[in-house]
Length: 79
Image (cartoon, rainbow, N blue to C red; front, side, top):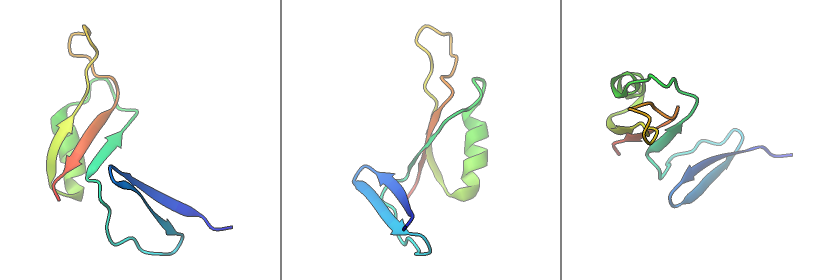
């Protein structure tokens, strides 16, 4: 019974068996869920910037919600 870890990207999934090392991942965009509705871009840049250079942080807002976040964000890393 092999276990697999899947890395999703715009070009498909890269899979590896448990114990193997992945050497490249195509996607540099990360989806982060279950965030506070008051989270700020600067907070996410500081936290995820520890893991690589950040290209952009997108926090979708509710329509007509006066700037209230939806509780998720997209973090794009520079390649």
